[in-house]
Amino acid sequence: MQLNIDSEFQSLREVLVHRPGKEIDRLTPYNKELLLFEEVPYLEEMQREHDVFTRLIRDSCGATIYFFEDLLGDILSQKELLQTLMREALAASRLEHLASDLLGVLSVADCTRALISGIKVHEVRGKLSSRSLVDLLDVAFLIPPCPNLYFQRDTAAIVPGGVLFSSMRLPERQREANMVRMIFENHPLFKDKIKKCYPPTTHNSPASLEGGDVIILNEKAVAIGCSERTEEKAIYHVAKKLIASGSVERVYEVHLPKKRNFMHLDTVFTILDQNKVLTYPDAIQSVQQILLYTRKEDDGNKVHIKRQHVKEPLREILKREIHGLEIIGTDKVNQEYALREQWFDGANVFTIAPGTVISYNRNKHTNRALREFGVEVLEMPSSELSRGLGGPRCMSMPISRNPVG
Image 1 (cartoon, rainbow, N blue to C red):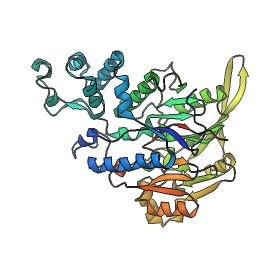
Image 2 (image 1 turned 90 degrees about the vertical axis):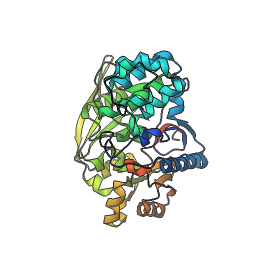
Image 3 (image 1 turned 30 degrees about the vertical axis):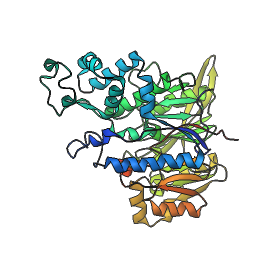
Image 4 (image 1 turned 180 degrees about the vertical axis):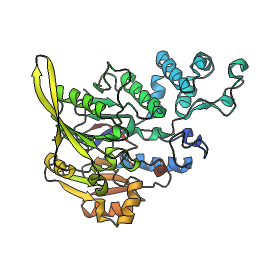
């Protein structure tokens, strides 16, 4: 059975997450910007918070939770995949010529840790020939770490019709998406179930697309943010693929300001139930334009799509696509609190069942507004996880949900 998800709100069955590990401890005040962090979090507390997150998922909806590190370790038993990923990781430091040497001294478990947490010169000095490391500083990374890996939503998205594998905007993060793609394409749990919808097989350098910009409006409509992380060209390719296959009828291209607090579409709104949506009003009002892709005509075996500007604001589009829509806005919150909570992704809650969400406890005013609208809010601690500037939705990549109807 093909991997396919047709809603954002039905009960979660399976989800992919990554528990933060040693890669977080690689962050220092001197390299944090290079590794795309604004602060240096405390790992042990991050892990405790993440454990609460996964426990809430298990206890509330009984979903199967897959951990990235475990799945990666499973596929690295295949020698060819191990060699490919290690060479790619070393290439980031222009050291791919050391791949054979490293593979000769590291176990599969060592390689799994190195691909996630990175590895420094001093950690292998004495294992490799001194000549191969002679010009390298002890503290230099042979393989850089992936501290953003706990934001699994960025790396892929499953929609009606198949899987979108991300082409990351920032080259420093592309390895994360590549490893997730390798897992899905090669792990026995998934490899016979995937239908790839992006990137196109004919493109060596595909336009950027990130999973946080993809939101399923209903079984026949998907919205994709054209943001600082996702490009128009990528949205066109996804729209053509999904519409041509008959998986969806409409794809909306939602243009966002190229700013950090509008990084992905799921910082603007998230879907909580069949007819409930949480929005950050300032973000919705900042949407610059919306375009709609639909089927134009068939020309023999070829499907053509059309792209047209939509005059209505995003609120009206949501009303049209979501029957009986109720919008829960953080405008119900004091403006100063709303701005503060949006910075910590107040609108980025993770829906695990109809009307049940996981939210950061620090966003207490947003959580109160949700409860007033009848949403069950499961709060999780967030003092350290929030330092990466992503919410519970960002940390989860749903693999399957109950179908609509």
